[in-house]
Image (cartoon, rainbow, N blue to C red; front, side, top):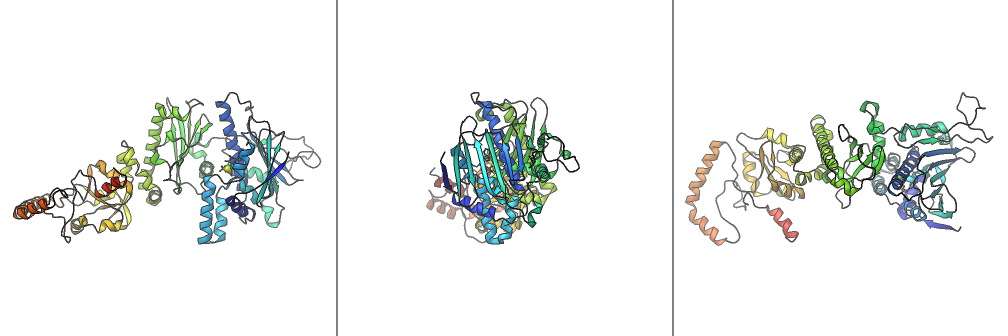
Amino acid sequence: MPTETFEFQVEARQLLQMMIHSIYSNKDVFLRELVSNASDALDKLRLEALRDDSLDVDVSDLHIVIETDRQARTLTVRDNGIGMSHDEVVQLIGTIANSGTAKFLRELKEARETEGTAAAEGLIGQFGVGFYSSFMVADEVTLLTRRAGESQGTRWTSSGEGTYTIETVDSAPQGTAVTLRLKPEDAEDQLHDYISPWKIKEIVKRYSDFITWPVRMAPEAAADGTAESEPGEGADEAPREPETLNSMKALWARSRDEVSDEEYHELYKHISHDWSAPLETIRLQAEGTFEYQALLFIPSRAPQDLFMQGYQRGIQLYVKRVFIMDDCEALMPPYLRFVKGVVDAQDLSLNVSREILQQDRQIQLMHRRLAKKVLSTVKDMMSAEPERYATFWREFGRVLKEGLLSDFENRETILGVSSFATTHDKDEPTTLRQYVERMKDGQEHIFYLTGESRQAIENSPHMEAFRAKGVEVLLLTDPVDEVWVQADPEFDGKKLRSVAKGEVDLGTEEEKKEAATEREGRQQEYADLLGWMTDRLSGTVKEVRLSSRLTVSPACIVSDTHDVSPALENMYRAMGQ
Ligand code: ADP
Ligand code: MG
């Protein structure tokens, strides 16, 4: 078979250069990445075998094996999973397709420019950079793979320097074997002796214990043909069976006190491709007729594509420990699309499809319960850990507010966990609870004004009377704010009212009465003028009347209480409605 040579895509080449010349000390993560890929491949094969009866594969012993060869200084991670076709190898291994890696590169560039090379190096180890991380420890990597259902295999080889070769091979075991030729040891590298079974066991235990497939260590074939033995045991012992290194316990099925935060974080990294620890870990065990477990994570940072079309929601669905699908949108409302995690349901068919899930009543109940659980977690965070909540709000507030438009059942809860810019404080946003506590005697409503920016709102003539009377006003500047306020929301029995609409009465009952009588009197006094102005402006405004809301400006335009706001009017106009 001919060997073809290909060039790496530009980004891939950059990333590889970083890997090869990495001075980052925690190189152990390469093994986590290879095991993680193998685990995904096993998930995919099991699923495909379930869905497609004609696929002729043996799925009775799906597993991952790690083999070392001290003589050749190689380490192999082998799985009998889905494998890759020739084209898939070119596409998946030769380019950077995954968004996590693309994001990593962006961050890396930024860190380099602003904080220097050392900071950039630091990022590598914290972040899963996937398959390419092999090149931190290897000077040559070979991948031999055969896709389930295909007869020919593919061998991919590269030293990471610009090009790779691909060759079709007639016989290859089904699945994928990645073989690393380890870089020569140097004094510093004594620390990472990846040939040592102890080292490997330790890394697998630390990073991959929760992997639901067995990760086995093959007994090493020593030069004299006997298996390597553990220290303290006789060297003449018979070759040992492969040893399973991980506990394979699904983290979400174990009780809280059995699992360390670190283990949760490793699972989070595995499913989210995010390198920083999550802001919050949420557990839910539902018992009864429809049993399920959920382990959810709120990330500590919003992904950059959160507002882009096609952003993938990160909940994975399992059925009785069997991975079924990624990005299960039926499990989380769109406004909580930043939540990552795993849901494992006991009573669903392994054959469920996305369409079925959308209509399933039990799934709908689950969706509601999960949404409520996330919101109540945020609520708890708000009272118990204000700083953490502030981070949450900064990262996800804008997307959470979309829920005010779509989730009427939880609207008041969402309002309750929201924060808004306010005239009360220049820098710190306020919650509605805090606003209500500061309300003046006789103030019935929660006042707000929408606009393009804080400055634009503060300069609005509508604000004058409020400023003069010292009444707090919320300053709403997100586009989505224009929309949800239309629904006349209420919090704690108080209506949210725009300061730009209808009559606003400030002050105590008595003052209001006084103001009303005075206004009537003056309305009479100026009746001719006002009538004349209304006439002249007919077709432009509905009515000209005296106002008590201005202190400096001569006039302002006010909408009726139920009219759309000027900003929304502009928005509709821009959309051609
Ligand atoms: P990621 O796992 O984040 O997608 P990687 O760089 O780790 O990124 O892997 C790139 C892709 O290569 C994977 O998405 C997968 O499609 C494919 N791949 C890697 N390892 C294997 C494997 N052992 N079996 C099958 N496919 C694999
Ligand atoms: Mg990977």
